[in-house]
Length: 303
Figure: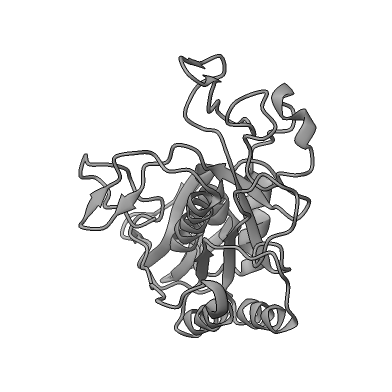
């Protein structure tokens, strides 16, 4: 989520150009509740998405109240489901208003045989060693999505990358959180419910894969598709126009689509964070001007 991008070193950050707020509040042992307070603090500092890469196997009412407050404040919590390969609920991932993320294979095409491990880390397969039901991450009916979780190149201290690949849902969750950051970059009007809906509607169905048949319903909506999710976020906020005439108009929206029979008179300004699309029968008479500005930093009207 924080790696430098476009430098031909290591990996690319999923949350490209997104701002990051780090919390120093730990989730270790007796400090677990302290970490929930830290999440609440991040929400009130303006964080729109919070990634949680730690788990507990106990549920508490005061934690539920904090998660609900964070949600009502307009912040989405994305959390790791756990790495033990069990169906037990882990928290905060399994609380309501939290996106629970587990891991899935991604590196090798189906049919690849590792000299030591055999069929290993096949794309979109639940078991990292195909045929071994113990080689999985936590999975249950409260998981919302899966994302790559095996053999992930990780960032470490001193501005460098780990020599060895890392495994874990602690790596899967920030891939989803970073995707949410990209979605909000093109459409900052999205609510936590909007983000969740778009992510689920654009996820890749993994349940038709023969090797995944024993896990139906345990991996949520399927595998994250970042491209389709970001595209869906932009299209979710795109306003469509047909059979209209505009005179000296300024429009500032997530996306603007002029589908058919639109005329622009005088001087007009179109501002968007996702796209301005002109389909057919668009008229700009002699003397009229049109300025188009598409930039994720644009100020747009969410109404």
